[in-house]
Length: 155
Length: 155
DNA sequence: CGCTGGAATGAGAACAAGTCTCATTCTCTT
DNA sequence: AAGAGAATGAGACTTGTTCTCATTCCAGCG
Ligand SMILES: [Zn+2]
Ligand SMILES: [Zn+2]
Ligand SMILES: [Zn+2]
Ligand SMILES: [Zn+2]
Image 1 (tube, rainbow over the protein chains, first blue to last red):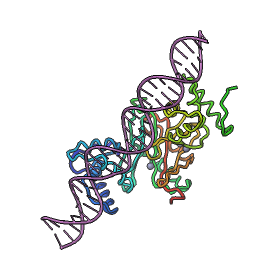
Image 2: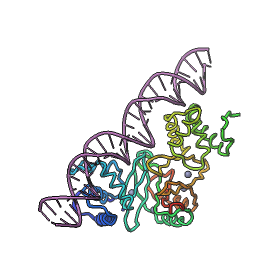
Image 3: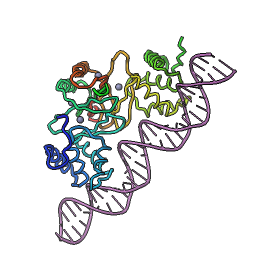
Image 4: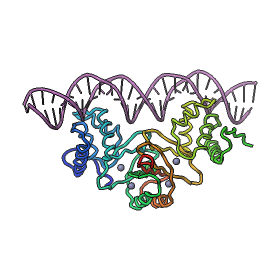
């Protein structure tokens, strides 16, 4: 689903992931907390990766005024529990996007001129990566693919 | 006839890339310089990615005492000319490895526990990526694939 | 309910990778 | 050999991220 955009208010169809994340955190022994929930709900509304800076800025701007430490701490915890995927697609800063429990996911094309990021899916690519599993000596649990080039506007 | 400085570790079979890089830089209008050459010769000897920090430390330790600014500047120039590939596979720091003019290349598996990086090649994967070219709206010029998991030692 | 121990939070200091500045040194062409 | 301009490097600076620790909040208990 590339292109799912921000849903500023009210229930949204990604709330299932919010429940999933909350349950996983509870299972892992975490207590509830407002800052963590705010991060989770923000990520739940995004269709693609969002930089840590952007997440932090966005949450600092709310009336709750979430702190930077809480944002980064939460992102780290979510990554540890495989609830979000951490990506480094640009000049040294991390982005995050939620991981669907279903395994459904996408990869990214990045414009090397303007930095624009676009998601894409491809079953053939996934199949090729799947076939790789035995061939590398590691026990692979995730993968990421980044294509780089010029976007239509910059070409 | 080209007075390439003696490599303290002895002659290496990648000197062709050194020549290639020097020629490309000259074509791009750069003058020669000792710091830049040192970076190029170091990269020429590596079989896989090396972090910028490592490159910098290594070159600072030489009797020439290459400066940090020169190292990063050179890496940026080499990347711009597509002579090296910049990778961000770990905790927010860049690695570099040379690009073979032949197009021959590999991808990486990273251990999420100990950080170990291992290269691998796979024609099937390359084919799948090649088939993708038209399907994404970008004019793709490079790609990178990173698998993450546990290495044999950490599994 | 109101307590209480431990978890969660956030302000700001600390870090670390990378970038910028600019005086000096080096290259290359006359 | 001289001059114009490129390359270099010491160190200041920026920036994304992490750490510290005093304060606030949560959940179980009486
Ligand atoms: Zn995405
Ligand atoms: Zn995939
Ligand atoms: Zn490599
Ligand atoms: Zn490839």
